Length: 263
Ligand code: 15L
Image 1 (cartoon, rainbow, N blue to C red):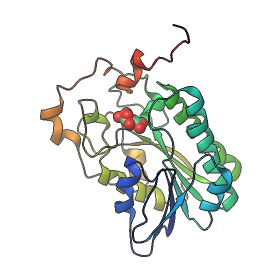
Image 2: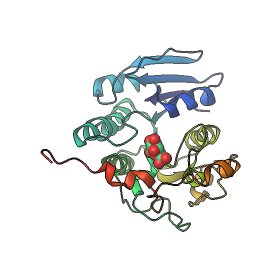
Image 3: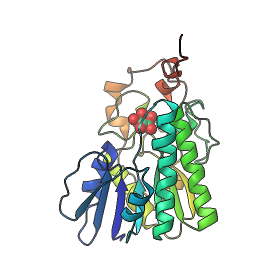
């Protein structure tokens, strides 16, 4: 079992799901965020930004693995995305390298490939990037940085292309893209414990009947999903967005077009 884990962005939704699911006797969770957090049993809290290299390097000391969730979880203006998400991921990987952390798990997203059509069940886990937003671009950069840190410095880096990690799916699209909180915990445990993974990009969803993506790569890490969004199908199959022809759904709508000043 991985004994000491740093979770960045631990105050967010996925971080909150993971705290209770990764807690285990003999394991320490080091939680970092800029939002206030209270440490529970087996936890310690570090208030730090993912863009602060000194603070992140200190946070990485004595850690066996980093789960990097910190950053903006949706679309923002380019300077914010560049700083918090792209520079933040660089900073966390560089901090891990300096502190000698052997493994980093990166929370990538389906929005790295959001402009591909929905429903292609042959799409490989490493489907070539086709981001739907600046946020999606930051996830492509995250994966590229992870690849660099594996090839150049030998870190083990697993990029999870997360579908939709919420308590429950919220619309018809999520009947395919849902990653349940419990399966998220299971997938993280697999990513933490699989031996010598090198660099991986992996679809991260539950065992959804309507899922578009293969679970083979995730299962090769040891992931055994148990949930299926289908139990919500009756209430959700009519909840459809006009952009539900593409993976990113509503993220591909013009409402995410960056404004042109003066227009
Ligand atoms: C994501 O990457 C977002 O962080 C989350 O808020 C959802 O929008 C999710 O993708 C999704 O595509 O459903």
